[in-house]
Length: 530
Image (cartoon, rainbow, N blue to C red; front, top):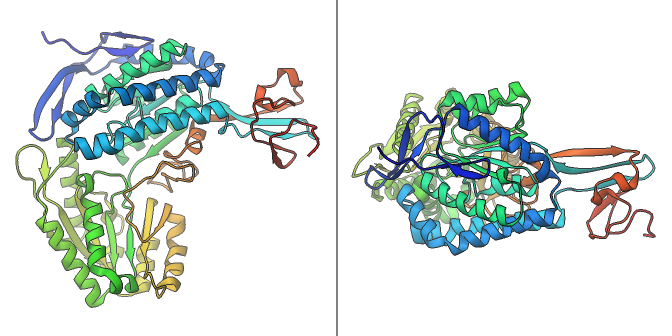
């Protein structure tokens, strides 16, 4: 009988109690199962995890922020120290390029996020204390006092992993326990990360159930878990169908659900930009769309192209680049099946394939695919033609004039990003303003003259947007300290004596926190001379 890997519940690694079968990771390059078996968890494991996290929540909420920061910093050091082994595991399970993508980019981004979260926790930057001396009111953002459930995606084994990524860092910085639901595409990577997190949390003196790891469970169990009122919030990155089912369960229980569900990240090419550098734009577009086999949430999945010779030349150049690229590795057979369903829907909606559209080669591979549709046809079937094709694929929408570009923009669902390319010389600026006015309320991040695939971890970042790109347009999944507010509650105190207030709301401010006192941001004590 095969040995099944343990899970991390209630502060210890143990065998699953009622697992409903097991699974193994699959190497996308070969299509073969690799590594040990992992359990599909049952109701007893989920119940113990939630109960342990609920017990830990009160203790962790009262912990000194310096202790939480020490955990996050130590965890970041452990990840950096173990980089080679972690990258080897992640590469085997995802086939993502090891030296460039995993070691050179994603892993250092992950440890950097943890360090930024540690700094935010240590400096109280996210709590935003506000004091109204005349009214006797004081408020700040504080821990939820309940655990956070995080569903990790398939495409970022480190930076968005449920047990190491941005959601995890933000939830822990707000002093909430995390129940991490690993993605079954990279269970061994998640397990090794959780081992580092567990050790670092214990050394920092945090409650044993601060970090817990579950590998997989049946959808019905997931819906039950999402509707458990003991949870304080849920973070999810994945398919729209799966996310909406979980959200419905969470909504019934009144649990905030922060989901990143789908996005086409539309790109609009203005005439002056094409006339200036059409060939270069085709190169930029192809490079962006095919980066990581198109498996980014900010992949440019729709490009609006103006009419005329310059537009025709752009289409021809982009088509040539897609056609010349070899079939690309996908993360899993599930991604391949989803991509094929999406492309079939686009074609049924009226799109015409220009190249690609076939699976081929050993393992899980798909040919880069470019489709085209006239703007009038897009507008007649806008809902179907906004089907996200997660992979190396994009849809070109040929627009007869600016009015059609505006109509396409107006028909768009909510998106993570929207890009408008303008002429460097300024000849497109009036058009840019007109189009931007339509696009702005439909995107989280409005971009000029660059493709959307890069998501910088910055305090000014918005990695979210209107539905269905995300389930709440006022929050971001990337960028500290703003991302912490998804996992925080606004606590107000009315006429509470100074000695009974949380430290950052008292009259004295020995920690040097920036506070809003009677409408003015200051480092001073309450009552001190300005």
